[in-house]
Length: 334
Image (cartoon, rainbow, N blue to C red):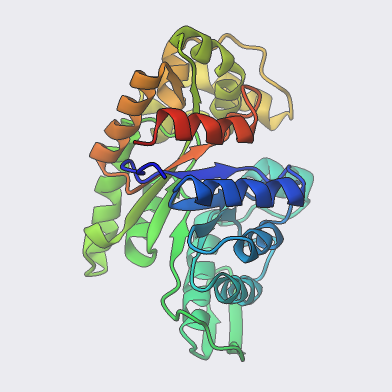
């Protein structure tokens, strides 16, 4: 087996059949990756079911879910599922919580997208208390519970909960209460220093050591011997991420202009595929694309910037997840 010096994981969406998903997790473990992550995008496969299937067919690889939201599951239900997944996997589960987005929750599912940061923070606090085995009585601004307590003891009372967040206040909150952050696909390299600064603020507020908070990031990656071919193939996926994020600290940190990104955002909220020009700067900022040497250097730059868990995410539309794993093994492992 080759050596995973970059500490890579692998992530993919929930659109794949269970048999294929299990095979991907097994292959990721076989080639020496540290973690496998299942994204829960609405309206695809349920991440807890998929993650459980992956857990029973693997032995050592971490099983990550990222991200779930506080609107479609009650915090007690999430804690129940998290504890069960951790037991099934033998203590290999990592759960990432996030607010999802207005289009999926409100415009499609009909669930009010209210107080997203408050909902995520309170949900995480309730979950952590329940997983620790406490009886929780919670009277928050979004959630009110109690008294509630899990009857099944957690395998790990300190099971890690990451926050999948990107805003200024949300990152500070993550520094206060989370074990780590899972940064969205499309996170530029320049954004990592912004993240670290705000995590440190939150950690200091809570009397925590900022170095104890892990940073994971989804890195959609496509490698070709001719680097320009990779850039060209990743333009449609880059357009999707521009629409998903719009104009905020994430995209602005990479030098992208607000007036450019907002056009993509407006199309995304309408449920349309943006037919807008995507230049090389946009692609290079939001995804990892190029020849093997360039891509390896870029991932190392993320590591040097403070990323603990670089997660190569499938390059949907450019190649299959099986091809992604082959690419990882051939080009990114030593």
